[in-house]
Image 1: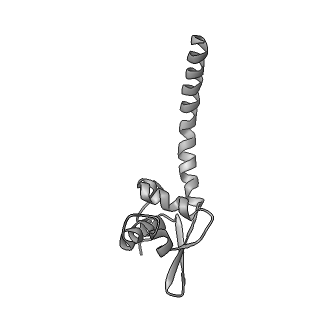
Image 2: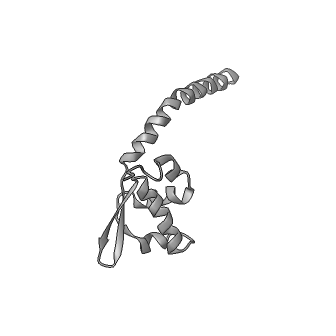
Image 3: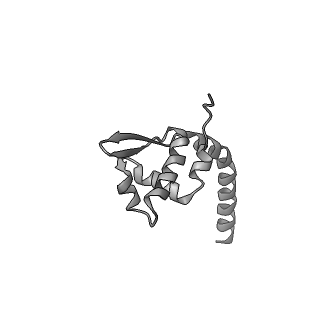
Length: 106
């Protein structure tokens, strides 16, 4: 049996709609109908986005009656934080250079 994820965190957050869904789910559990109301797309389209987020481990769902309720699973985002932290040194260097230039012109 293949247990590999179909989508990784980077692929999952590449789409702006999926990033917005993660923001909406931060701190609360929502039904797909509540999520769909926030986007100009069909429930089927939102379901596809939720499936990708779920396959990446970023959202979890549970059945409640007839509906599925979705919650954010933020732990996989630590992979992004680790990757981005490597580049932080470059940003800090650029900001330092910019500060020096601005102060020099003052």
